[in-house]
Image (tube, rainbow, N blue to C red; front, side, top):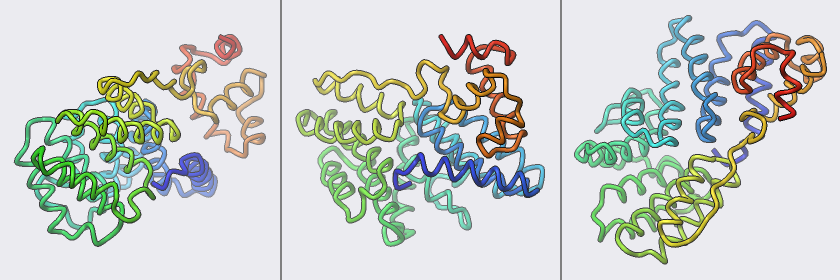
Length: 306
């Protein structure tokens, strides 16, 4: 959440490897969640695979509370592609509009998503009720991140006359920029509202801030959205290149595995090189093949050279 996504992904991979190699299969759900969330933020379709794995592991053990967390990355992935009905459905599974479900921490993390989705699907009363619930629950007193969410939610449901001041309070709140992705999302919402009410020059500043952060994080769908808003505000901006372009959208680790497999190494040998189990290598290859449009290891070398 503080923008160190590469480190987060590395630690999630390490956690998965340790859990699998020491026989703690159930504990992999926690790392599946973080892999899904990172992939969702970057627009990687692999987010759904990780969310499915989370659901599979948790429901097999009847850990239904943990299984619910899969709705968080699914909501974020849907937001990235602009499917606001799906965002609303996933977010409201964690907590219905108008109240924050008890003993469900993820209800706090998707609260702003639920407000935005409610607005974009013509559920204005739900959006207002949820923004009010966030304030009444005292979220701003809990953390700077939740203060950012609450002020942004209130700005979203406010009138065009009141919204700019609320958005300004949100992005200027102490510690707001400690949460780069969330901060950039609020800057994007701020810029969108300003452009809509005719404050185009001011909108460009906030949209530019959002775009810079999204590009640094390689949050491609969000960078695309910010870039589109900037162009609508009169500033030409090239579309960002999707992560993994030229390699079928593979992650850095998947490229490493694919290249070693193309050299003829077995799963065990690849695992020894990269400090992964042979099962983890096999799982990665299972996802790599369809990304590259191939069905066998023999086709890897040609696919990677294209």
